[in-house]
Image (cartoon, rainbow, N blue to C red; front, top):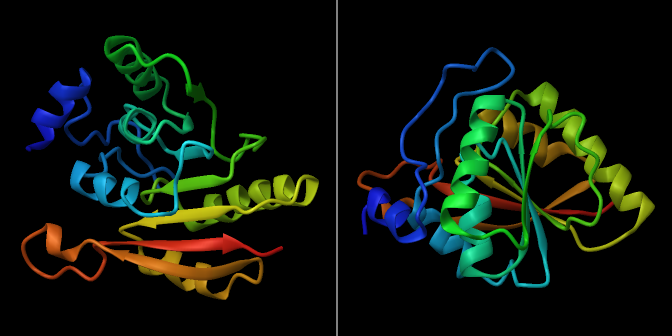
Length: 196
C-alpha cells in the first residue's frame, strides 16, 4: 500500500513534510514510512502492555498506528501547536480516542511517567536529546523498569552520542534497507535499553 492508502485506511492525514516551524534545534516534520512502522510493530519489542512515547509526533502517525496495530497506549509529544492540532484532528477523525494522548509541550519539559518505550525520528538536536534522555533517566530511577528507545534513521551525531552514553546499552537493530530502493545505511531502527 502507498502512504496515502495507509492514511485512508486509518482515516487520517499525515502525508507530507512540513518545515514551517523548524529551526536549528527542532527539525522538520517528516512522517515515518508505514513500511517501517509495520516492521517495528511486527518485532517482539512492543506489545499491548507497553506505553510508547513518540517524541516530535507531528501529525500523530506513529502514535495512532501503534495503538491501532498493537493496542499499546501511546503518547505523542509535539512542541509545534499547528502540528499538535493536526494530530488531535487525526485522532478524532480515526475515532481512536482510548489509549492515545497528544500533548503540546516541548520534549525537554515532558515529564515521563509510566512510559517504557520511546520513539525518535531525528526530531531535534543532540542538545535537546541529552535533556530528554535525562528526563527518561529520572523516570527510570523513580521507578526502575525495562525501558527501550527506538531511533529510526539515526543521524551520525545521534549514533555517536548514543553509543557512548553510559546509561544506555545497544540491544539490536531493525534493518529497513530492503524496504527502499538503494542501500541507505541509515534505513534502520537502532534499539537501546536503559541500564541506569
